[in-house]
Length: 354
Image (cartoon, rainbow, N blue to C red; front, side):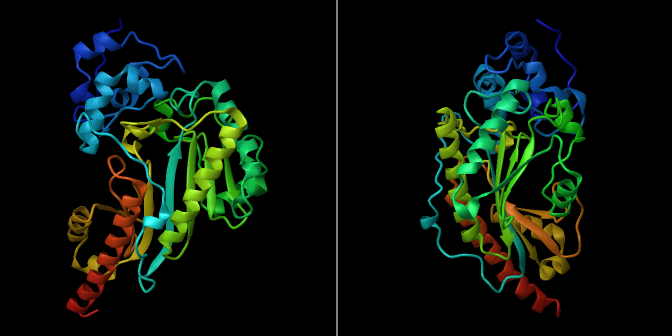
């Protein structure tokens, strides 16, 4: 049993839920799939002082073997009860309406993560497993239906011209994120990682970044329903091809939905977002917009990603929840909420004489 670590992120969920008692009970356990430990799981909370959650899973086993720590963190973060069950639903025929075509939406993007059973998650995955996931996907993507068909580009030995094109398209993920490094996700970089996209560049898969598979559907404009339909078909195509290749399914937990390396993504693992101009709300005050989004179960961000600042009056608006709601519910919430914000934005523009 190792000594109880000093957790620098004193306000994190890890600091609250990893007690000395739990540490003494769990710190000697090593998971079966990828040899992960509690010390590896909480590395970010120990190393940095700015974590909110501060914990990652190295494999599906981590959620079970270290349940005494993961369960209360997940319940607190997602606001679910101890006996909650998660239901997935990708049936796009249940969605009513769409984003108002008059709304100034630049683009729509919906992403989910998926993990193949029997392989570790990015923080714990072994070198052999990572290469195994890549091989499975590289082979599976050759069987996609025509509108999803495209090319897989491994990061290893990537041609400079292709690399530059992926950078220009904002598709390329790069190394050097301190969180991901400390969490163990950048070991053996860039081996086993790569990017797939279809010819139209509307369907993408990131292989072995923060999750084994990040499946992304996107296009210009505000056709959220169309983007969701493509995503649903894409997830189906990836799942069916992988199953045919190795007989394995995606990790789907009855309590926690689709398994991801970061517990904040559990459940649907879905982030459905639009980039929309909201000049009326900008004039009225960003704090007011944030409060309104909270009421609508949405999350506003500046349009430079997670930690980027605010650029003018274009916002990234996405669903706030991941776990405890189905994919259909989250997409419906996003469509309805964006329409509401647009309607209110027009009224605010009038109010401020814009």
